[in-house]
Image 1 (cartoon, helix red, strand yellow):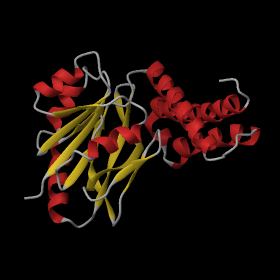
Image 2 (tube, rainbow, N blue to C red):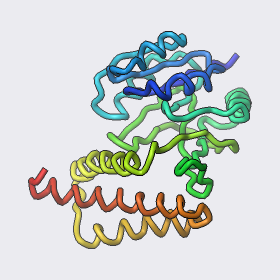
Image 3 (cartoon, rainbow, N blue to C red):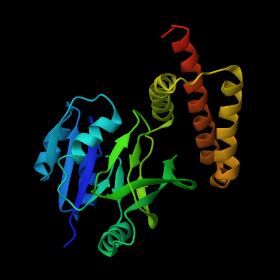
Image 4 (tube, rainbow, N blue to C red):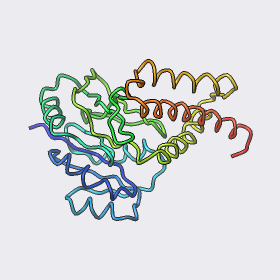
Length: 245
C-alpha cells in the first residue's frame, strides 16, 4: 500500500498546529520540523503522535530538506501550520497517490482575508510529490524541485493566510529582506524603473488578470499589499547596495 508522509515546518504555532495535524491524520507519518518553539508547539505535536525534529532556522529550504531526509513515505505532502486539508481534498490526495498518474501535484490555495476566502486570489503550489530525490531551493518563497509530470488537484486547501492587515504587511516586509538578499547574491540590480514598474505590474496581475476585483474590497487590499511587497523588495535591494542596512 502506498505510504504518505506529511511535513509541517513550525515556529510558535500553538494556535494552529493541532487543527493542522488533525486535518492530515490520514497520513501514515507526520513530521514536524520545529525551529525551537517556546509556546508549546513542539509538545503539542509530540502529544498528537508526530515525529518532531528540532533544527535552528536558517532558511525555509534547508528546514524542509532536513525533514525530507527523515521521510519514509512513498509520497510527501507539505503543509504549513495555518493550512488545513478538507475531507474532499483528503480523498482526492489518496486517489492521486494510488493512481501514480503523475509524479507530483499542485494544490489550490485561495487567500483567506477579511473573514472570507478570495477564490480569485488563488495560488497553485507544488505540495504533493513522490519521495524520489525531491528537494527545495531558495531562501524564501522556496521552490520544490522534482521530475516527471505534474498534475493539479481540484479541491482547495483551507489556508488562513493572514491574521490581520498588520500581520499581512509585516509578513511581506519580512520576506522582502530575504528576497532582496537573494537577488543581490544572483548579481541582480535594482533601479528606479524596477521600483516603479514591478509593483504596478504585480497589482495589475493580481487585481485585473487574476480577477481580484471580483473579490471586492478584500481583493483590492490583497492586490495593493502584494504590490507593496514587490516595492519593498526593490527598495531593500537599494538599501543593501548602498550599505544602509
